[in-house]
Structures are given as structure tokens and as C-alpha cells.
Amino acid sequence: MQSHPPSSSNSPTRYRLIVAESAEDLARQTAQAIASALDLVLAERDRAQIALAGGETPRATYRQLGQQHLPWDRVDVLLGDERWVSSSDPSSNARMLRETLMAEAPGSHACLHPVPTELSSPQEGAEAYAALVQQLCGGTPPALDLVLLGLGDDGHTASLFPGTAAPTITDRAVTLGEGKGLPRVTLTAPTLSAARRVLFLVSGAGKVQALQRLLDPLESPERTPAKLVQPADEVMILADRDAAAGLQR
Image (cartoon, rainbow, N blue to C red; front, top):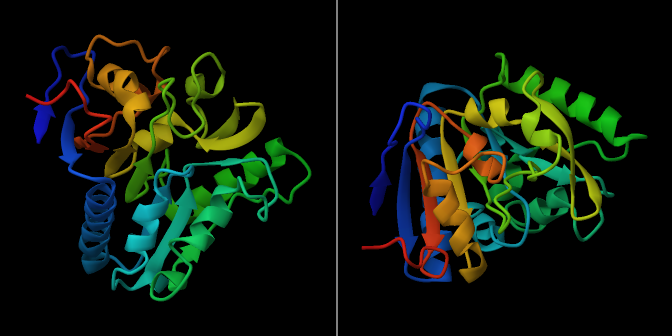
């Protein structure tokens, strides 16, 4: 376990790196971290709002998370981003959550709020999702209780891809993204940063450079948009040994 404190006032984000011994250990530790955070929130408030990452990496985490005995009917599950595809499409993040976190009880009792990709355009979908996030979370920007993010090998997180407009959007909660040839709907950097708890889940040797850049206080957010996520509390990074190669002492 390592802490990477900021080296300058321009880089206030504090990171805590936890390295798991195996894929199974990574999924277990991440599921437990999310469940513990939910426990704390639900001990104080009636409902909790979390935003989860898509992609392949978190599948095992979500299967384990869905087995945690929590009052899932009091948990609103949102998405950090979504591809503009049908909810039945194999690349749909909402479908992936239904197949993992919500595949069986008790996780099946969670309240999933998918991006409304059945609307006529990504712009309409982004506006509708922004209204939903605002309604559930309140605040400007809306404050989620927890956000789980991935990290792309190019330094993107959610659908904040380098070289696109999405990372620069700061005046709304949700915006349009573009990545790997598909339009997307994504939470913006201010919304991700407003979360009370931020976790990154990073796996695989292909992420070594991106993770090093994320932890580098001198790295440019233009090149590595994941650095735009700057919550008040420290950011927990859960990584496997392949992704963390070269970072451990």
C-alpha cells in the first residue's frame, strides 16, 4: 500500500495505491471497498447513489459485489458512462451490470438507472440523464456517494478521452463523449470529482504507463484526462501486480 501525496498546489489529489495479488483478490478487495462505503452511507441516510464503470475489467468485482448482503433496494446504481447502443447490445454497460451485479439476489434488488439510449439522439440521452442524476443526487455539481472508475491505456476514464471535447466540459453534469468509434454519454469531470468516494480499478500490463501517468503530479490532464477527477478525499486505486509493475518498492 502506498500513498502518493501531491508535490505542488496545482496537483492536490491524493492517491492511495492498493496492489492485489491476483485477479480474484482484486475483485474481492474492490467489492469489499464498495460494500464498506455503502454500509457507511446507509447507516446515515435512507438511500445511496453510486456510479459504476463499464468494460470487462469490473465484471468479477460486480459478481462478488452482488453477493454482499446489503439493503440493495436502497441503492441507486448509475453509470459513469455508456455507449450509445441498445440496452440489449453486448457492449452495453447497463446490460453488463444486469448480467453481473444484478444477476441474482441480493444484488438483483439494486435500483439501476441506465442511460436512456432508446431516445432519438445522444444529445437527448445526455440531457435526460443529467436531469436524472440531478434528481437523485441534488447539488451543483451532483454529489454521488461513490464512483468506481476504470483507466484506459490512453489515460481516459469514463468517456473522457484525450483529444476530445468531453474532458473540457465543466458547466454540466453529463455530456457527450466520443471514443473508439462510438458516441457515448458520460459524467463530466466536475461530477466525478464531486463524489464523496472515488475508486479506480486498474488491471493488466497494458495499463502500466497510464497508471504511472495518473500518479505523476507533473502529468498533464490533457494527455491523461483521468487526472481531472479531483475529489476532496483521497482516491483509492486498486490494481493488480501487472498494472502496478514498477510502482512498488
